[in-house]
Image (cartoon, rainbow, N blue to C red; front, top):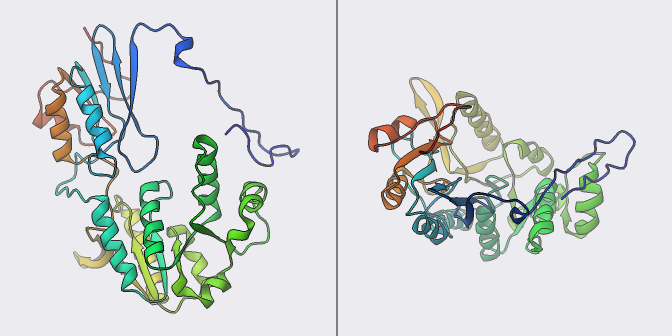
Length: 334
Protein backbone atom coordinates (compact mmCIF):
# COMPACT_ATOMS: atom_id res chain seq x y z
CA UNK A 1 0.00 0.00 0.00
CA UNK A 2 3.04 2.28 0.27
CA UNK A 3 4.53 1.45 -3.11
CA UNK A 4 3.70 2.76 -6.58
CA UNK A 5 4.72 0.37 -9.40
CA UNK A 6 7.49 1.87 -11.49
CA UNK A 7 8.39 4.57 -8.99
CA UNK A 8 12.06 3.61 -9.30
CA UNK A 9 12.16 5.35 -12.67
CA UNK A 10 14.18 8.54 -12.92
CA UNK A 11 11.24 10.79 -13.71
CA UNK A 12 8.55 8.74 -11.98
CA UNK A 13 6.43 10.35 -9.29
CA UNK A 14 7.16 8.78 -5.92
CA UNK A 15 4.48 7.74 -3.45
CA UNK A 16 5.22 9.23 -0.04
CA UNK A 17 3.13 7.40 2.58
CA UNK A 18 1.90 9.24 5.64
CA UNK A 19 2.67 8.25 9.22
CA UNK A 20 0.33 5.69 10.75
CA UNK A 21 0.10 4.90 14.42
CA UNK A 22 -2.11 2.91 16.75
CA UNK A 23 -4.58 4.81 18.89
CA UNK A 24 -3.06 3.29 22.03
CA UNK A 25 0.13 5.24 21.34
CA UNK A 26 -1.68 8.46 22.29
CA UNK A 27 -3.13 9.57 25.58
CA UNK A 28 -6.70 10.72 24.92
CA UNK A 29 -9.29 12.15 27.27
CA UNK A 30 -12.02 10.05 25.64
CA UNK A 31 -12.61 6.52 24.36
CA UNK A 32 -13.28 5.64 20.71
CA UNK A 33 -15.45 2.72 19.64
CA UNK A 34 -15.56 1.87 15.93
CA UNK A 35 -18.44 0.02 14.25
CA UNK A 36 -18.47 -1.45 10.77
CA UNK A 37 -21.70 -0.37 9.05
CA UNK A 38 -23.61 -1.32 5.92
CA UNK A 39 -22.59 0.62 2.81
CA UNK A 40 -21.89 0.00 -0.87
CA UNK A 41 -18.14 0.33 -0.21
CA UNK A 42 -16.20 -1.99 2.09
CA UNK A 43 -14.75 -0.50 5.25
CA UNK A 44 -17.49 2.04 6.00
CA UNK A 45 -17.17 2.82 9.70
CA UNK A 46 -19.23 4.66 12.30
CA UNK A 47 -17.80 5.90 15.60
CA UNK A 48 -18.87 6.66 19.13
CA UNK A 49 -16.60 8.92 21.21
CA UNK A 50 -17.15 8.71 24.96
CA UNK A 51 -15.83 11.23 27.48
CA UNK A 52 -17.86 13.56 29.68
CA UNK A 53 -20.47 13.16 26.94
CA UNK A 54 -20.91 10.72 24.07
CA UNK A 55 -20.74 11.76 20.43
CA UNK A 56 -21.89 9.41 17.64
CA UNK A 57 -20.85 9.79 14.00
CA UNK A 58 -22.54 7.67 11.32
CA UNK A 59 -20.23 8.20 8.35
CA UNK A 60 -21.80 7.01 5.07
CA UNK A 61 -24.14 4.12 5.81
CA UNK A 62 -27.47 2.51 4.98
CA UNK A 63 -30.03 0.12 6.45
CA UNK A 64 -31.13 -1.85 3.37
CA UNK A 65 -28.04 -3.76 2.18
CA UNK A 66 -26.78 -7.27 2.88
CA UNK A 67 -25.18 -6.15 6.15
CA UNK A 68 -27.97 -3.96 7.52
CA UNK A 69 -27.69 -5.64 10.92
CA UNK A 70 -24.26 -4.04 11.38
CA UNK A 71 -25.83 -0.59 11.03
CA UNK A 72 -28.56 -1.54 13.50
CA UNK A 73 -25.90 -2.68 15.97
CA UNK A 74 -24.24 0.74 15.75
CA UNK A 75 -27.60 2.43 16.41
CA UNK A 76 -28.10 0.25 19.50
CA UNK A 77 -24.63 1.11 20.83
CA UNK A 78 -25.12 4.85 20.16
CA UNK A 79 -28.33 5.25 22.13
CA UNK A 80 -26.62 7.18 24.96
CA UNK A 81 -25.02 9.72 22.62
CA UNK A 82 -25.68 13.39 23.42
CA UNK A 83 -24.60 14.49 19.94
CA UNK A 84 -25.37 12.70 16.69
CA UNK A 85 -23.41 13.67 13.57
CA UNK A 86 -25.41 12.05 10.78
CA UNK A 87 -25.10 11.87 7.01
CA UNK A 88 -28.04 13.08 4.94
CA UNK A 89 -27.18 12.31 1.33
CA UNK A 90 -30.77 11.36 0.44
CA UNK A 91 -32.56 13.84 2.73
CA UNK A 92 -33.27 16.22 -0.14
CA UNK A 93 -34.92 13.74 -2.47
CA UNK A 94 -38.63 14.08 -3.09
CA UNK A 95 -39.87 10.54 -3.62
CA UNK A 96 -37.31 8.32 -1.93
CA UNK A 97 -37.64 4.59 -2.66
CA UNK A 98 -35.61 2.04 -0.72
CA UNK A 99 -34.62 -0.72 -3.13
CA UNK A 100 -32.76 -3.66 -1.59
CA UNK A 101 -29.79 -5.52 -3.04
CA UNK A 102 -32.04 -8.60 -3.28
CA UNK A 103 -34.43 -6.74 -5.62
CA UNK A 104 -31.49 -5.50 -7.68
CA UNK A 105 -30.16 -9.05 -7.98
CA UNK A 106 -33.48 -10.46 -9.17
CA UNK A 107 -34.07 -7.72 -11.75
CA UNK A 108 -30.54 -7.82 -13.15
CA UNK A 109 -30.61 -11.63 -13.28
CA UNK A 110 -33.86 -11.53 -15.25
CA UNK A 111 -32.40 -8.96 -17.66
CA UNK A 112 -29.39 -11.20 -18.36
CA UNK A 113 -31.50 -14.35 -18.70
CA UNK A 114 -33.79 -12.81 -21.30
CA UNK A 115 -30.96 -11.29 -23.35
CA UNK A 116 -28.95 -12.80 -26.17
CA UNK A 117 -25.52 -11.57 -27.15
CA UNK A 118 -23.20 -9.47 -25.05
CA UNK A 119 -24.16 -8.02 -21.64
CA UNK A 120 -22.71 -4.78 -20.30
CA UNK A 121 -23.14 -4.12 -16.57
CA UNK A 122 -22.50 -0.50 -15.60
CA UNK A 123 -22.03 0.15 -11.88
CA UNK A 124 -19.57 1.96 -9.66
CA UNK A 125 -16.19 0.16 -9.58
CA UNK A 126 -16.10 0.66 -5.81
CA UNK A 127 -19.53 -0.90 -5.26
CA UNK A 128 -18.15 -4.31 -4.33
CA UNK A 129 -21.52 -5.60 -3.15
CA UNK A 130 -22.85 -5.00 -6.69
CA UNK A 131 -19.75 -6.72 -8.07
CA UNK A 132 -20.61 -9.77 -5.96
CA UNK A 133 -24.15 -9.59 -7.36
CA UNK A 134 -22.93 -9.78 -10.94
CA UNK A 135 -20.41 -12.52 -10.13
CA UNK A 136 -23.34 -14.64 -8.95
CA UNK A 137 -25.43 -13.68 -12.00
CA UNK A 138 -22.56 -14.68 -14.28
CA UNK A 139 -22.35 -18.07 -12.57
CA UNK A 140 -26.10 -18.69 -12.88
CA UNK A 141 -26.17 -17.74 -16.56
CA UNK A 142 -22.96 -19.60 -17.56
CA UNK A 143 -21.16 -16.41 -18.51
CA UNK A 144 -17.76 -15.01 -17.54
CA UNK A 145 -17.55 -11.65 -15.79
CA UNK A 146 -14.93 -9.41 -17.44
CA UNK A 147 -13.57 -6.39 -15.61
CA UNK A 148 -11.07 -3.73 -16.66
CA UNK A 149 -7.40 -3.89 -15.70
CA UNK A 150 -7.91 -0.83 -13.50
CA UNK A 151 -10.62 -2.65 -11.55
CA UNK A 152 -8.34 -5.68 -11.19
CA UNK A 153 -5.59 -3.47 -9.79
CA UNK A 154 -8.01 -2.05 -7.23
CA UNK A 155 -9.04 -5.56 -6.18
CA UNK A 156 -5.35 -6.42 -5.82
CA UNK A 157 -4.91 -3.40 -3.51
CA UNK A 158 -7.77 -4.70 -1.40
CA UNK A 159 -6.13 -8.11 -1.28
CA UNK A 160 -3.02 -6.42 0.13
CA UNK A 161 -5.21 -5.20 3.00
CA UNK A 162 -7.35 -8.21 3.90
CA UNK A 163 -5.64 -11.16 2.17
CA UNK A 164 -8.76 -12.11 0.20
CA UNK A 165 -8.32 -12.79 -3.53
CA UNK A 166 -11.48 -11.75 -5.42
CA UNK A 167 -10.23 -12.55 -8.93
CA UNK A 168 -11.06 -16.26 -9.01
CA UNK A 169 -14.39 -15.83 -10.80
CA UNK A 170 -13.43 -13.06 -13.23
CA UNK A 171 -11.44 -12.37 -16.37
CA UNK A 172 -9.79 -9.12 -17.48
CA UNK A 173 -10.59 -7.19 -20.64
CA UNK A 174 -7.44 -6.59 -22.69
CA UNK A 175 -7.63 -3.02 -23.94
CA UNK A 176 -6.08 -2.47 -27.35
CA UNK A 177 -3.23 -0.01 -26.85
CA UNK A 178 0.48 0.12 -27.56
CA UNK A 179 1.77 1.12 -24.14
CA UNK A 180 0.52 0.03 -20.73
CA UNK A 181 0.86 1.76 -17.39
CA UNK A 182 3.43 0.38 -14.97
CA UNK A 183 0.76 -0.69 -12.48
CA UNK A 184 -0.83 -2.90 -15.13
CA UNK A 185 2.42 -4.21 -16.54
CA UNK A 186 4.13 -4.98 -13.21
CA UNK A 187 1.15 -6.04 -11.12
CA UNK A 188 -1.98 -7.02 -13.04
CA UNK A 189 -0.31 -8.72 -16.01
CA UNK A 190 2.34 -10.27 -13.79
CA UNK A 191 -0.30 -11.87 -11.54
CA UNK A 192 -3.14 -12.62 -13.96
CA UNK A 193 -1.76 -12.69 -17.49
CA UNK A 194 -3.70 -15.88 -18.23
CA UNK A 195 -6.98 -14.18 -17.30
CA UNK A 196 -6.88 -11.60 -20.09
CA UNK A 197 -9.42 -11.82 -22.91
CA UNK A 198 -9.11 -9.95 -26.20
CA UNK A 199 -11.91 -7.99 -27.91
CA UNK A 200 -11.77 -10.59 -30.70
CA UNK A 201 -12.43 -13.41 -28.20
CA UNK A 202 -15.49 -11.57 -26.89
CA UNK A 203 -16.66 -10.72 -30.42
CA UNK A 204 -16.56 -14.40 -31.41
CA UNK A 205 -18.48 -15.50 -28.29
CA UNK A 206 -20.52 -12.48 -27.11
CA UNK A 207 -23.09 -14.63 -25.29
CA UNK A 208 -20.38 -15.95 -22.97
CA UNK A 209 -19.53 -12.65 -21.25
CA UNK A 210 -20.79 -9.92 -18.96
CA UNK A 211 -18.58 -6.83 -19.33
CA UNK A 212 -18.20 -4.47 -16.37
CA UNK A 213 -17.93 -1.25 -18.36
CA UNK A 214 -18.59 2.33 -17.28
CA UNK A 215 -19.53 5.32 -19.44
CA UNK A 216 -15.87 5.94 -20.28
CA UNK A 217 -15.32 2.32 -21.36
CA UNK A 218 -17.95 2.41 -24.12
CA UNK A 219 -15.22 3.23 -26.66
CA UNK A 220 -14.21 -0.44 -26.45
CA UNK A 221 -17.41 -1.39 -28.27
CA UNK A 222 -15.68 -0.17 -31.43
CA UNK A 223 -13.18 -3.03 -30.97
CA UNK A 224 -15.69 -5.66 -29.86
CA UNK A 225 -18.30 -4.75 -32.51
CA UNK A 226 -21.34 -6.40 -30.86
CA UNK A 227 -24.39 -6.99 -33.04
CA UNK A 228 -26.90 -7.32 -30.20
CA UNK A 229 -27.18 -7.71 -26.46
CA UNK A 230 -28.14 -5.69 -23.39
CA UNK A 231 -26.84 -2.83 -21.28
CA UNK A 232 -27.79 -2.77 -17.58
CA UNK A 233 -27.36 0.52 -15.73
CA UNK A 234 -27.02 -0.30 -12.04
CA UNK A 235 -25.76 2.91 -10.47
CA UNK A 236 -26.96 6.27 -9.15
CA UNK A 237 -29.13 8.69 -11.10
CA UNK A 238 -27.82 11.77 -12.90
CA UNK A 239 -27.74 14.76 -10.53
CA UNK A 240 -26.64 17.50 -12.93
CA UNK A 241 -27.50 18.73 -16.42
CA UNK A 242 -24.04 17.72 -17.64
CA UNK A 243 -24.61 14.15 -16.49
CA UNK A 244 -27.98 14.11 -18.25
CA UNK A 245 -26.18 15.02 -21.48
CA UNK A 246 -23.80 12.09 -20.86
CA UNK A 247 -26.76 9.72 -20.72
CA UNK A 248 -28.12 11.05 -24.01
CA UNK A 249 -24.75 10.41 -25.64
CA UNK A 250 -24.57 7.00 -24.01
CA UNK A 251 -28.03 6.09 -25.29
CA UNK A 252 -26.96 6.94 -28.85
CA UNK A 253 -23.97 4.61 -28.54
CA UNK A 254 -26.12 1.78 -27.20
CA UNK A 255 -28.61 2.15 -30.05
CA UNK A 256 -25.75 2.13 -32.55
CA UNK A 257 -24.78 -1.35 -31.35
CA UNK A 258 -28.36 -2.60 -31.02
CA UNK A 259 -28.18 -3.06 -27.23
CA UNK A 260 -31.39 -3.20 -25.22
CA UNK A 261 -31.23 -0.79 -22.27
CA UNK A 262 -32.23 -1.66 -18.70
CA UNK A 263 -32.13 0.76 -15.79
CA UNK A 264 -32.93 3.99 -17.65
CA UNK A 265 -34.88 5.25 -20.63
CA UNK A 266 -35.14 8.45 -22.62
CA UNK A 267 -38.31 10.53 -22.26
CA UNK A 268 -39.41 13.97 -23.44
CA UNK A 269 -39.70 16.75 -20.88
CA UNK A 270 -40.62 20.28 -21.95
CA UNK A 271 -39.87 19.28 -25.51
CA UNK A 272 -36.37 18.00 -24.69
CA UNK A 273 -35.07 14.43 -24.34
CA UNK A 274 -33.99 13.57 -20.79
CA UNK A 275 -32.99 10.34 -19.04
CA UNK A 276 -35.47 8.77 -16.65
CA UNK A 277 -34.21 6.08 -14.32
CA UNK A 278 -36.06 2.82 -13.81
CA UNK A 279 -36.41 1.50 -10.27
CA UNK A 280 -35.17 -1.89 -9.27
CA UNK A 281 -31.70 -1.91 -10.85
CA UNK A 282 -29.81 0.05 -8.19
CA UNK A 283 -29.78 0.19 -4.39
CA UNK A 284 -28.33 3.34 -2.88
CA UNK A 285 -25.34 3.26 -0.56
CA UNK A 286 -27.01 5.77 1.74
CA UNK A 287 -29.86 5.75 4.26
CA UNK A 288 -33.31 6.86 3.08
CA UNK A 289 -35.29 9.66 4.75
CA UNK A 290 -37.47 7.03 6.43
CA UNK A 291 -34.38 5.30 7.84
CA UNK A 292 -32.76 8.60 8.87
CA UNK A 293 -35.90 9.40 10.85
CA UNK A 294 -35.87 5.97 12.53
CA UNK A 295 -32.16 6.26 13.42
CA UNK A 296 -32.58 9.70 15.00
CA UNK A 297 -35.63 8.56 16.96
CA UNK A 298 -33.79 5.47 18.22
CA UNK A 299 -30.66 7.32 19.33
CA UNK A 300 -32.67 10.35 20.58
CA UNK A 301 -29.69 12.75 20.85
CA UNK A 302 -29.74 16.19 22.46
CA UNK A 303 -28.03 17.69 19.41
CA UNK A 304 -28.27 16.66 15.74
CA UNK A 305 -25.57 17.81 13.29
CA UNK A 306 -26.30 16.87 9.65
CA UNK A 307 -23.31 16.42 7.32
CA UNK A 308 -22.72 15.24 3.75
CA UNK A 309 -25.98 16.80 2.59
CA UNK A 310 -27.39 19.79 0.74
CA UNK A 311 -30.75 19.39 2.50
CA UNK A 312 -30.09 20.68 6.02
CA UNK A 313 -33.60 22.19 5.99
CA UNK A 314 -35.15 18.70 6.05
CA UNK A 315 -33.51 18.04 9.42
CA UNK A 316 -34.49 21.49 10.74
CA UNK A 317 -38.13 21.00 9.67
CA UNK A 318 -38.44 17.51 11.15
CA UNK A 319 -36.40 17.58 14.36
CA UNK A 320 -35.60 19.85 17.28
CA UNK A 321 -32.08 20.79 18.38
CA UNK A 322 -30.56 20.65 14.89
CA UNK A 323 -27.28 22.53 14.54
CA UNK A 324 -26.30 23.45 10.98
CA UNK A 325 -22.60 24.17 10.60
CA UNK A 326 -20.93 25.83 7.64
CA UNK A 327 -17.44 25.06 6.38
CA UNK A 328 -14.85 25.79 9.07
CA UNK A 329 -17.44 26.39 11.80
CA UNK A 330 -17.30 24.54 15.12
CA UNK A 331 -19.73 23.57 17.86
CA UNK A 332 -18.76 23.51 21.53
CA UNK A 333 -20.48 20.91 23.69
CA UNK A 334 -21.20 22.27 27.17
